[in-house]
Amino acid sequence: MKRARPKATKTRPKKPLWNIGSHRKPRVRRFRWIRIIPFKTIFVLLGLYVLFEVLTFPFLSIAQLSTENPTETALMRQRIDEAHDQGTTMTIDYRWTPLSHVPRHVRMAILVSEDGTFYSHAGVDWHEVLESIETNLEKGRIVRGGSTITQQLAKNLYLSTSRDPIRKGKELLITWMLESTLSKKRILELYLNIIEWGPGVFGIEAAAQRYFHKPASRLSIDEGARLAAVIPSPLRHQPTETTSYVEKKKELILRRMSTR
Image: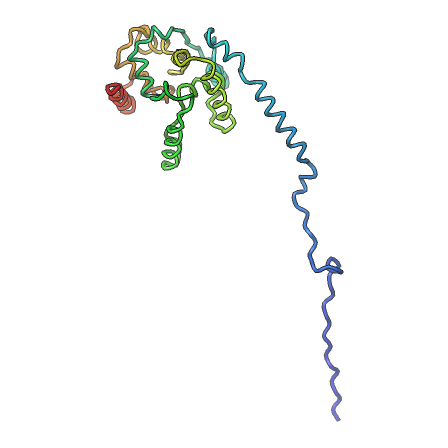
């Protein structure tokens, strides 16, 4: 007689301790850093940073520019520091000349090259900014800038050559302050006198003497166009060189001048 096999009994798996009395898994605590750094602290730190930036803005200095010429610029100091870091020294050639001593054709060459709408915009040429963004996105790199003469003046006077967003934000605010405080004539005069034209060469007078051995008041149309051509890359190109870059840029500037 065969013995009956015992029936197999099914045993339910025991519920884990975390599941007793609940059908939900325990919540994983995320963003624990919020407890460490409360939102109030973040806002306070952000507010202090903004306050510091506002307090360090050159409000008084910009107001003084209407009657006083700058003795040095942030870019000059940057170049001196860069030379020091490389174990060398930098001699700054900076000579002031009134706007009335700069020939009209030289001023025109620089305007058509750097800021064709200088007298009509309020500091920023937004159309040029959008065009530059589109071009740079197509090329996948920065090949075209959209800064106006006033923006370049703000950067050279008070900031640096850095392209970080914070620096750009400061540049826009200083640009607005310059346009609100100074006349277009004064902005152009300041720009022509402090712009970089080579290693240690700052301003149209120093550039005229360095490259053409004459005062700015005696610069020819061709010489003015050459000086304008190298403004975007003053440490890479010289106005007296006969490279394809300088020659093509010079011819483009002369063509634009002929239509004005």
